[in-house]
Structure formats: C-alpha cells, structure tokens
Image (cartoon, rainbow, N blue to C red):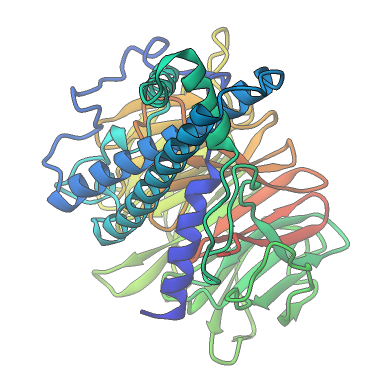
Length: 532
C-alpha cells in the first residue's frame, strides 16, 4: 500500500466524523411531493440490479456501526441530563452506588468495544467493496440504509438506548444511580497510537494548506490529470502553474503558505481568463477569455513548460465561458469543446489541426458550463435555464432537461455550472437562484432539487469516486454534500471552506481528498482534511 493510499484511508475515516450529527430537517428541499416524475423502487434504488455481496456486507456492518455509535452517544447525553437533574440527590444507599458503578463500567466498556469493532469492520468492508454502484454498468445504487437521515429513526434509537440502560436497574433509584455512576467512571488508558477522543471533540475540518494571491479576482483553477500540478487563471490575464504539495504531515494547526509557482505567463490573454482545462493525458492545456479567444498549448509535465507560440482559436464572437476535452478514441486524438456568449453555439475543435469542425446550435442563451464523459458525450448548461445532452456521434442534442426551481412560482433559473459523474449516470446542475438539481441521466428524470447555498451556485463537482458533491457559491462558501444514502431524500451537507468574497470555482484533486477554490477575494486556496 502506498503512502497516498494510507493517507486516503485515514482521511476517509475522518470524513465520516465530518457529517456527525448533521441536521437536515430544516434544509429547503423539493423532492417527490413537488416533482411527481420521481420514481422509487421498493429498495429505494435509482437503478435496478443485484447488489454485490461485498456491498451487502459493507452496508450491514456500517449500519451496525452507526447504530452502536448512535446508541453510545445517546447514553452519554441521557446520563449527563439525569446527572444535572439529580445534583441534589447525593445521599443514596452506598450499596446501590457501588453496584451501579460496576454495572455502568461494564455497559460502557461493552458499548466502546462494540463501536470500535464495528467501525473497524465497516472501514475494511467499505475499502474492499465495489466503489460506487450507481456509477458502474450492471450494478445498483448504494443501499439507502448506508446513511439514515430520518428523524423518526433517530428518535426510535434514542428510546431504545434509554430503555436498554434502564432495564439493568432495580427501581427508579437504581436507574438514577446507574446513570450517575456511569458518567463518573474513569476512562480506560489508551495506547500512544490511539489518541483520546471525548464526546466534546470538534468535528474535523478542512484546513487551508496554500493560498495564491493575485491583484484581481481569480476565476479558474484546474488540477493536472497526474495530480502533481495545478493551473490558475485570473482577471489579471495571468496564467500560473503551481506545484501540488505533499500532505502526509498535515495537521489541524497547519500554517497556510504560498504555493511554489513553476510557470508564470503574464498577459496570457488580452482579457480576463474565464476558464481552462487539461487534456485527459495532460499534454494540452486550453484557456478561454472575454477577449473572445481560446489559447491551446502543448504542455510538458516533466519540465513544466509550454510550447510557444500558443495556437489561438477565434471562432467565438463572445466571452468563452467554459472549455473541456474529449479523447477521440477512434482517431487517437483530442477534441476541444467550447461554449460561451455571443451566438451561443458550442464548437468542437480538432486539437491536432486546430480546426473547428462542428458548430452545435440549440441554446438560446450564453453557454455557462460544460462537462464530458465517455469519449463522445457531454452536457451543457445555459442562461436559457436548460441543460442539454450532446452526442458527437449523432452530431446533435439527444436530450433536453429543464431543472425545476426551488421556488414554486419560478419557471427555473439560469444554469451556471454542470457536472457528470464518471459513469455518465448522474448529473448535477448549479443555478443562479442558489439551488442545485440532481438528475438520473439514463432514466431522464429529476431526482431532487435542493438548496445548499444562500447565493448563486457557480461551481459543482463530484469527488474522485462521486461519494461526495462539492459546490461553491456567491455566499462565499464551499459546501460538501454526502451522496452515499438515498438520493431522493434530503442530503446531509456541511460548509467546509469559506472565502472573503464570492466563490467562483471549486475543483477536486484527481485522487486525493483535497480541493482548490478560487474567488473574487483574489485568492486561490488549496484545502485538505488532516488525516489525524
């Protein structure tokens, strides 16, 4: 196992704690009641199909782990409440207090051991199981029981846990003494490799590792496919390529520092750099600008250098808002897809010749976002409030989606960002009305519309295995949503990073649990979750 794999294991374990006790009851969500076209199978899966045995085992173990952990937490809360309520009851029989002390120690030790064993089994089973069932052909979505978010089930768990504590005592006084003495027990000694964790431990948080400062707003940032570099573009017309740091020794008290800039090109465009993309193998980089041009350059990752002069594409007659690469497997060459304002057309360019060979019409407003998968498919989001699915083999639009709004009286909102998971089964869209839409592409249906931000959503991206969704918005925040449960139910969401001004871009690392964010506060920041 490599250092990177070990680091990811530790970070994955901490990600579970990140969503501990997340409240979702007040989240503004429009699901099946508002959108009748959502269909749920009895198993609460988006797609039918048999679940692999390893997935079933993982679900069972994780369900046990969560139940035991929830029971342990409820017992602690109940004991603290009873202790506060019974501070005046201090003269109980000595024999009852001694018996309750023994009972409390045995009960707590059993819960502690069961929780530790379940957590260990859960993590091992999860790492050995198939990564994402929704994203692989022929398999089903992860079982909805992986993460239960129902308030009814939570209250039921609390009642069961309190009943189990009360059943050990004889009469009201014994029950009271059990709870008091259980809370007063001395903790078991821990080994040096096992740091102490109390019920008051703060939730893990992403920390800013590096921060690149510019003189104007930073609009875009993209990781190189190999993960060792990342590029940054800003309104100052400057293109930078920075080194990705090692995160093995990252700690919660990390001091943010400036990244190492390996390449800097001032006046790369005549206008602001609005977007950029790397080719799938990392040998090409493309940037788009409000000077209505795209610059395409060959890149050498070993020497971190670009080939001059850059190829300039001038087919757009408005601001180029987004670009993405498609690997043409038939010709073993790269294709560049670009869209923006002006004529609102999407252009497909052969990177080998630098010649645009397709102009795709359909949108009636500026194209604001693009996302591709599978070698011939891509989606586009537009100011015209629609998402379109395109297939280069048919040379046209194969599907048109109009995401519903979170506001009942609205007929939708401009689509500012789109992303598709690697398998091409799930699509997410970010909107200017602060909402996000989740879609089943193969079933051509809306799963749900939810609102993770208080301002326009400008960036949406799936994590490397699509277990999580990262969104950035004009409320200055980046929010992480958990996609491992029933996708038709409200999604647990946590704000994981914040800028001093509007967030414009958020991008995941190709294989580590870190991400870049760029914003109107003139910074580009690398965030990571410490493994310890």
